[in-house]
Image (cartoon, rainbow, N blue to C red; front, side, top):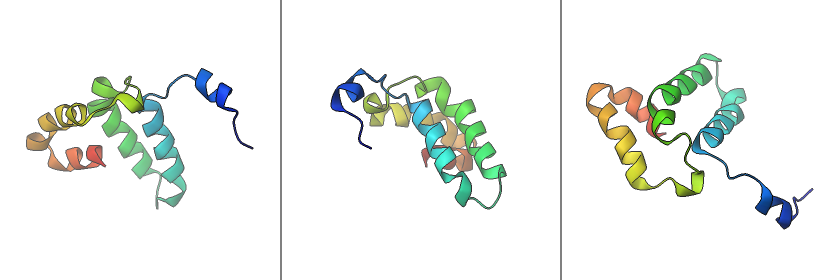
Length: 85
């Protein structure tokens, strides 16, 4: 059933954190073990959510993503790669 436009407009905008956690949940059944979801969530909680977790999805810009990932690349490239995904 479709959501009426007026109801969509009243809905609170989704934050990056909300969207990311929804994505992880949607992928959970396709991963071979639950460890993947825990790793993704842990990485995002540690590196990404503190910087852009509260930002509305529509307002996250390329500069925000670069500023979030840049400090991670030199230290732990694999973590930065997971965060980027």
